[in-house]
Length: 181
Image 1 (spheres, one colour):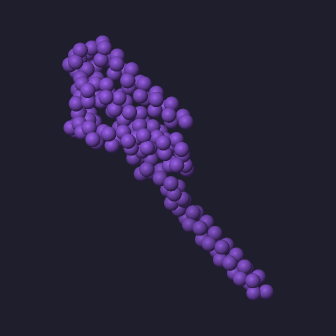
Image 2 (tube, rainbow, N blue to C red):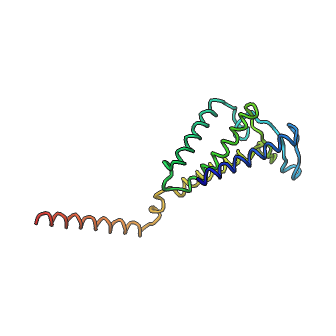
């Protein structure tokens, strides 16, 4: 249940920051925080993911449906029963996706972006949540996948497996002998 509150926090932070920017600045206005390095620049972005890809409404409808299904599956604990860490990156992705989806509905298919580092496309907190969530998910899947700990046990793990196998063979032989008698 905590993941829902975390996702709501991300959505509220994202929407509050966008509403503040929308009502306190004019489109295209830029306020330097660190001159030439970091600015708050208000734009309404018709594109996706840091302004890199064309907006496609059917893609976003499918993404929204998948997000809702994921929420239901996570809430019902159908997925990630054993790896509760997975809730963190998925919650970041979900919160960010819903935050931008709200903008798409509220701002005529556009997203409000305002974080401007001058060397990267202008983005918002929802974009950051999605990217951070995906990075954490990728790192977790690559380096902390289930069963990885057993692989890293080395010789000790191998010895333990052989000893367990030998014990199983002894038990089978013992059972067969008892059955003969």
